[in-house]
Image 1 (cartoon, rainbow, N blue to C red):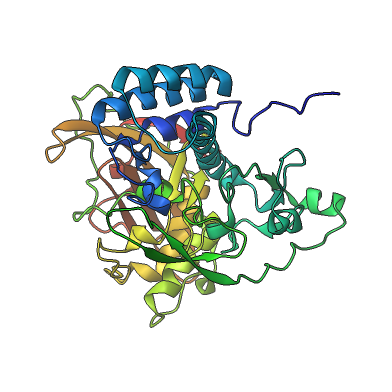
Image 2: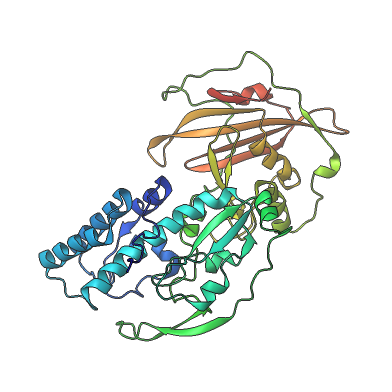
Length: 413
């Protein structure tokens, strides 16, 4: 009789998966509910491993499994050695406990890496694994479901959706929809929320959580999404300086040729005054493939990636700060400067608050608004420590050449 396949979901590592796992911090815990949902994006835990030394050893074993493709049987040898070395008294049988640690970490790190990779695809398809031993009927019902990438359903249903879940998500393009006989994505399935009890054996006692039907408690989140949102830099309190700090390893060059002619736009492409703050932010995010409730990764014309979201225009408390200096009307031009800049420059700047040099990319573009004599200059600067944007500077005190400093990485023909 042939044996069941032994491949594991997440057994083929990739850079985003490895980077996600290695950015976690070790956290001793007493119970699996000590941290919950998206908190796992930041912490590596093994339930009941309440000493740093045990957590460190398990982390090394899991890291090896992710980066080198260690099998479950190989991981179990590490598990046995760690238990013997520390005299760890754990709950459950050896085979069950080692499988939970192994599969949960591989599956969630794999999912987090895929969440980042899939941002480029406009549609996502849910696929249930055919070889799972005990299929969940809700997961089987979702098999083949195609939804838009920004559908809120993915925020709670991006797999894994439970202990041992082997479901996956694949990215699709419009031609793929045609191949599947679809003109538009499927309607989003209704979500029925259920109350579940967790933590009965926890020192904190019983806890009631709400989870969608078909999702195990603790899995009702999209792995990696919280990490992606945190990658959005805050806005710098001061406007960007037109020059370059210089002397920090990058040459202080200036171009010999002028910028390309400004691109013409119609006045109606600018936004009207008096809109709610979120409408201005939505207008900025839409051409970049983003939504108010979902951050997204934007590849620029040279292949560099930027993480954008509503947090660009919010304070740490979530208050809107988009209505600033009258720039809100020009936010569509700021988005176009990221997607189709006239030039991209890179420069270094010394950040005294961080006590180190940081690299910044500067996107420069000019637009000729019908009815205005002077072209509108748009500058978007993005890097560690924050972002800055000049969205309606019309060349009074400084010219476009003042911003073209550092090393030019791209020039529009």
